[in-house]
Image (cartoon, rainbow, N blue to C red; front, side, top):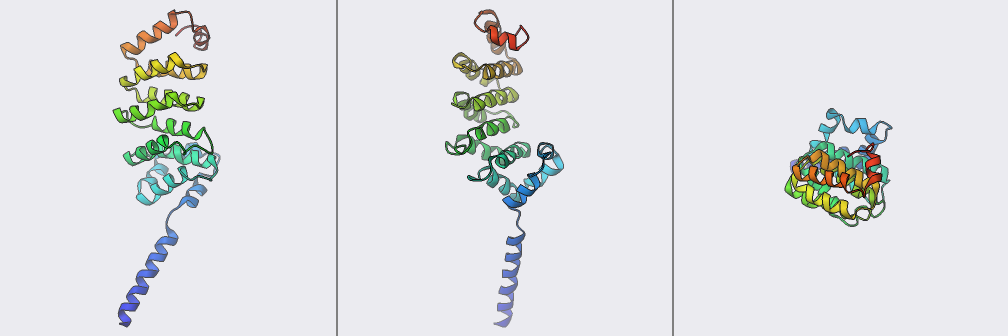
Length: 212
């Protein structure tokens, strides 16, 4: 009986030690609380540490931590983009589709859209990301267009064309045109030539130095 009790005590102590030493949000906050955080989360040696289950969970928890300073949540969101695993993509897609995710700071969703542009293109990614082109927040629409341009999926062209026709913001229109240029399909190029020749978008042409 005494041996059994000693065994239980050892197991309990090991469990408590593991729990105390577990990497969590506070540990991540300390690592990201530096002026050069962008450089840090771009460093592969730093990023690779977060491909373990425990550390990855801390990144997701901080990105999704309602009530935490939005500036640190943004850093966790961008870190997920650099982690680049299927699990990181799924976490970001879930945040992007959650209508309450960015309630405390509308621009949070734009950083999720930006981070999704770090992943390889795919039909499902485009199907979800395209809804950002209709978002009421200008920054989300702009970031979505930029990410679709980075992903360079030909399927994105029709959504970008539709968004351009209804878009009022010059900044978003510029992002859409740049995305279409990056994708570079015949359909995309024809649309850009139409914009350049219809005489309705002189402000846009000026933004590109007088020529699209």
